[in-house]
Amino acid sequence: QLQLQESGPGMMNPSETLSLTCSVSGGSTRSSSYYWGWIRQSPGKGLEWIGSIYYTWDTYYNPSLKSRVTMSVDTSKNQFSLKLSSVTAADTAVYYCATHSQYYDAFHIWGQGTMVTVSS
Amino acid sequence: DIQMTQSPSTLAASVGDRVTITCRASQTITSWLAWYQQKPGKAPKLLIYKASSLDSGVPSRFSGSGSGTEFTLTISSLQPDDFATYYCQQYDSFPTFGGGTKVEI
Image (tube, rainbow over all chains, first blue to last red; front, side, top):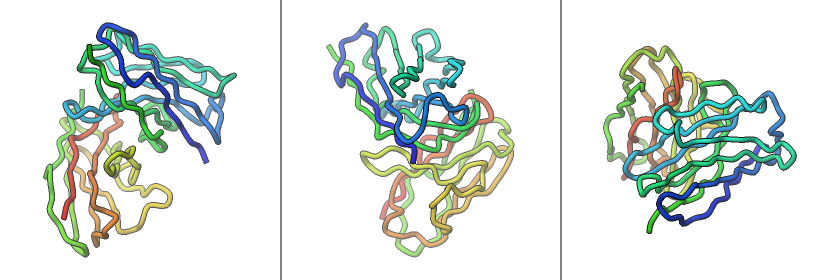
């Protein structure tokens, strides 16, 4: 059974770069069966898809965040990662990693989420 | 962006009630729609994909219907475990979510 687990900094200062990692168990980031995505949830903006990556390193991002987002896959550690630059208080949210099976798709499996607070 | 609008935003119901939640898309999405259930402090859980396909392990009291721009999630007989917030999500283009419907007692 595929399982996902996010890890991240918890608290951050404005203008810093957020780095999050999602560890995958019960499956492989080398698999052609999965796409790996990031979604966040804040009281103000609800659920928002950030972007997704395939094992080939093909990435695609939400246009509203594209200029600040970088995603990568580390197959040796069976992890994938998100970097979000120049964070502000508006980036305060619970960040989830999730998996899907097609380019645009429903998100079948989610991690438990990690809270990120941006505050000076 | 495709905007997703859910109604109602809050729904008061009792155990045993038939509950219907509506989701409207700002443009046609054929059947590329999913429904999720979320409980406080937990991640969303996929219930239905492709508008009407039940995900594995989801009770049959949940059903989805619709196509084009209008969709519904129905719970045929509300159970105590079903009090939660429900979200729709389109994936005809880059994914976007509805604002949620909280089902409360």
